[in-house]
Image (cartoon, rainbow, N blue to C red; front, side, top):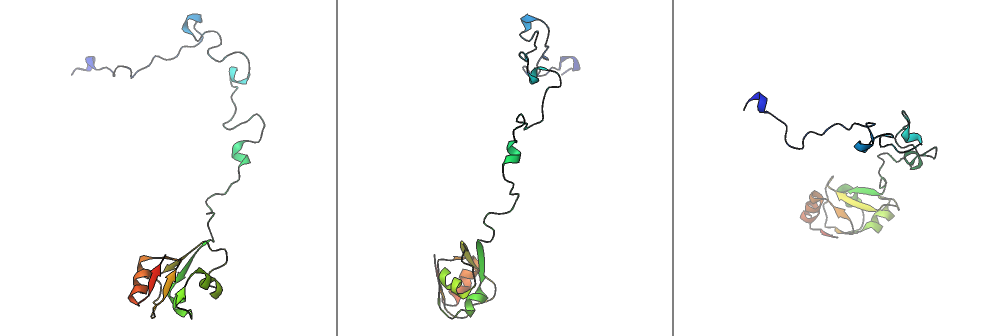
Length: 144
């Protein structure tokens, strides 16, 4: 390979567009800008998102940021809380009546925090792997 034989790959380089160089170029006279109007003139571009004075889309839409729409709807219940309940058959309604979850709770998950000594039966709740093992080790069952 010699320095005088190095060339870019075929099609890698494009000729610069030469506007205003006659009718035969296809970009003569108006240089591809059309006739009249703001975009035909030098300096005649507006900012991104400008809609001619109408309220722009990015200002019309509500801003929610990163606040989760499900915030406050997902709740956790610990094994300690379950052990304190007087019943052995536990479902979302029991937790609601005991005041452990609010009425608008969409999902309730049992997490492994503390321990449970007696056999309890869980129905209709999400359960973590560790909590499931602890409940089954105490002789309880988990049914989804």
